[in-house]
Length: 306
Image (cartoon, rainbow, N blue to C red):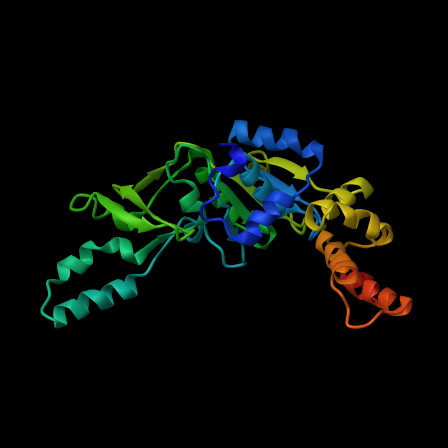
């Protein structure tokens, strides 16, 4: 069985397509290998839509590492949220409900695993024979202290769940649902330690500076806008070989516009799909086609809008 055919359980169809059709530059190979061998997170910068997050799906598919665990960062994200969540209110409610029914409440208290759920980071650090791929998306949006809060986790590859540590003497093994929802993980003594360090991809749009202590622990790369040959490869992978020739003018138009303003790769794919794949109810005039191209290739930067 080839690596690409292993570990496809749990993949969403859209994610599988992203991994299979991603066409990275060859220059990305060495940084990816360095991050894998050195157990360092890969910090990927570039404009929106250039293919930063797609790199994580490509590595997971190419190496057969299972579905990607994605942690979308917001202004309120915390390290604990990435590791696990705990619902004490539901647990207390169930304990009280059991007591009202005359059932021994200690039984509900012992089933603490049902009120816990591992987050993407926590799931990625579970002991396994092969590393998981963790995508920490748009870390620019994180609170100022989150990058530094992640340092010890990245260095040590372990964490505790205090709620389970406190009850380890009476219940050492607890089954906890994982972030991908496909299974449960058995946590011993409230402590999790990885056997294979996850391949961590953190994406950044370059909108903020990160602490030096954080940066020195990362392998850093920048993904530039694709050139003509790479654009053709992207179109070929998504829409078929014959579409490259049929859409040559659109590819050239996209390349020219991308040189002037920020554009996302999927904008080109949308334009080709609409004008070359979908059969319109009537023949579009050249002016109508030009207007659609202008609409679909609108710059991402607001400052570039008319």
